[in-house]
Image (cartoon, rainbow, N blue to C red; front, side, top):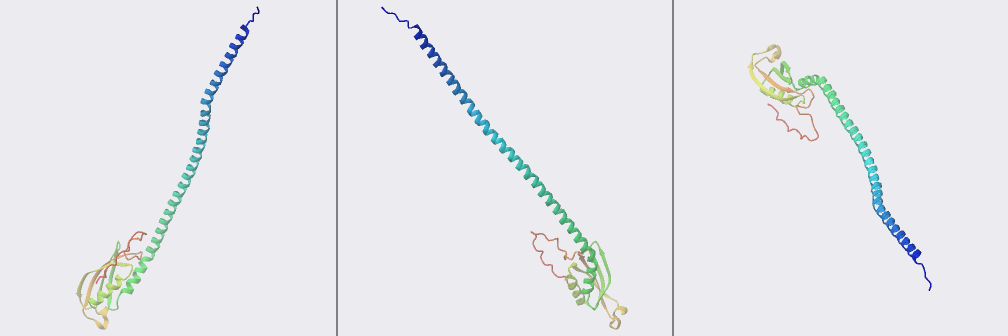
Length: 209
């Protein structure tokens, strides 16, 4: 009877099974590692891309902030320049204002009216004079009110005056003495406030009589 020793075959089979188990375990471990590592790598790559975008956006924001600051600085400088130009123009107008006021005052004075006194205190003018009659005074006030350097022309007082021969000459007789008050505008705006883009036109003032 022939006997066959199967122990080496069984040992080989068990060794093969162990190798397969080890291979399966290693494969499972590799799969588990890949499952953990691949998302980590992908997330890291995505995070790096987002960080680069954030850095780029921060650089753009910083550049825009600098540009905005420059624009604000330019606007501030432009406003300061415009304010200085307005001041210069105002000073120029105020420098020539008194001359223009006297010119308009002379032009508004009728032939039969004589100014005896003219005073100006803080833009409030007081005119004292003599006129032939009330109508002449009314004409003077209307013509004065028409000037852009006089406004709020108001007759304060009228009274009979004694004969003044040195003024009237051959036409000496009774005169009307008057006192008129008016506001002065050295800028020639007729007492109107400085115009603005949104300001409505000022209503027309009534002519004083």
